[in-house]
Each structure stands twice: as structure tokens, then as C-alpha cells.
Image (tube, rainbow, N blue to C red; front, side):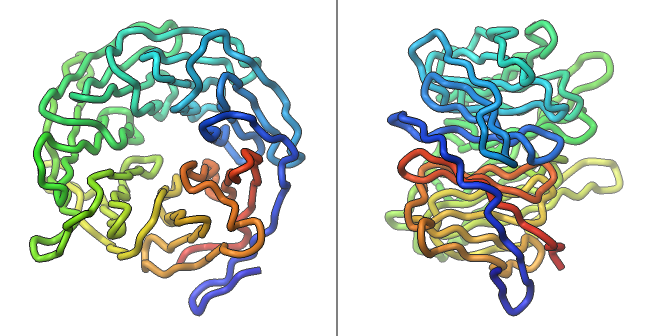
Length: 340
């Protein structure tokens, strides 16, 4: 058990997985919706589904090409997963059998982000070095849209809104001011037309803050409905933004929370109510409403956590998975915690 002045969290290890993955780069982790019973793992050339209750590897598939998995997403209906490597291809797999269903071809650069629509009928992928967003039909692999923004350097995160009528992207503009990130929107009409709009300039730091030596690397994540957004810079902290609509229905994001701290990885939970940060083996869980740190893990085997691998949070917001330097996995449960 771990407690703070505001909240008590019961944290129990569901299992320390006995399986270790011998790969140069760390595994990519994603829980399979709708709950946290199954975990999808991409490790080198291996894809597998792990039972989070027992630690058993339920299904595995060794892929027949040389590039290791670097990005992965699981459809909200839990039936399909998408993986991407440095070969510019996106592979769609059956979550039930791990049979490859479709290979998506078209990106000319490494695929940086993957996101499924809420109804699982579309998947969006972004390339780097001049953002190109491609939207695909998940049933047959058909290319639905190609959205280009060459003035952007790269995309930190993409997300469909819960009604699948808009796609949001956090992008790094093609300029030297690391204080600013752009939030971009593509809106889809019933007739198939696409309207694009720069929603907001997200200011990470004020003009009077000293940012000499601060990394321009941005970490961003959306809540599952696209209404909350966490954007941060490793050296100075993260900010939470919330979507609001004006009288005309136009959306903008306003800042609701700022936390100053150093971290290596950060991740917003699907419900948008908690933020998990990783810093040199220290895991912290933050209340995304109050900014209070509700849980800190920093003893025992936690010192072996691989901070280069982001944790994964289940769709029901009750579990997260962590990876250690020896490439073994541990899955933990957050019990009886309702953020105030």
C-alpha cells in the first residue's frame, strides 16, 4: 500500500512476468481493450499476447522481416492491432490469432504515430520529417485520406475524437521556438470533405523562463475521447489541456494544470484523470485534476525500470505495465482509487 496526504492507493503486483525478451531495444506495450486482462507486446521480431492475470504468453508470432516493432496501437474493439517499424510499413494483425491481415504501404519515412478511430473502422498513421497523416480503412486497407503539413517537423501524438468526426495532432512547428507546440485539427464531413485548422498554439513555457539547454523533445498523449491532452518537455515538466467549445461549436484547448518536474516518459490515462511519469527508475502517478502526486514507486526492483520504455495503461484505467532493463515485464493494479 502507498499513501499520500490526499489519496490512498492500494497497489498490488498482479504478476511479475517470467518471460524476458532478448532484444536490443525495449518492448512496445499496449493493453488489449476493453479491460486489462490481455497485453500486446512487440519485442524485436516477436509479437505476442500476454495474459495479464497469469503472465502466460497466450499467442505469439515471429514476423518474417528484419525490422523490429517500434510503434503499436490496439483497436478499441480489441479485435485488431497495428504495428510499425523503421521500414515505413504498417502491419495490421488479428488480435485473436496474430495472423497478418493487411500491410499498409505509402509512407516514405518512418511511421511515428498510430491511432485507431473510436469505432475501430479507421486507423491513422503519421510519418516524420514533414507531417503526412494517412487514414486507412481497417477492413480492407484502403487509403481514405492523405493529409499533408510539410511545415511541421514531426508529430508527437494523434487522436480521434469520440465521435470520429475530427482528428487531432500535436506537432512540432518548423521553427526554433521550443516554447510552442501546435495543435492541429482535421474535421471530416459526411460527404467526405476534410477541413483542416490550426486549433491552438500550446505554450509550454513562458517567455521569461530560462530554457537554455532544454531538450526540444516533446511527449504528448490524449485521453481516449480526445478531450484532454498532456504535453510536456522532459527537462521542465508537463501541462494538461482541456477541450472547450464556443457558441459556434469551434473547439479550443485551455490549460488546466501545470506540473514542474523532470521526467523521461509521461503518459495520460485513457480517462484523462491521471498522469504517469517515469524518471530514472522512479514511477509517479499524478492526479490530473489537482496536480497532486498520488503514488511514487522507487524502491527494490523499481530501480531497474527501463525509463526508455513508456508504461502502458489499460482501457479501464486500472492497470499499467512496466518493463525492466532485463526486458522482463511486470503488470500492476491500481485498486480503489477515484481521483478527487
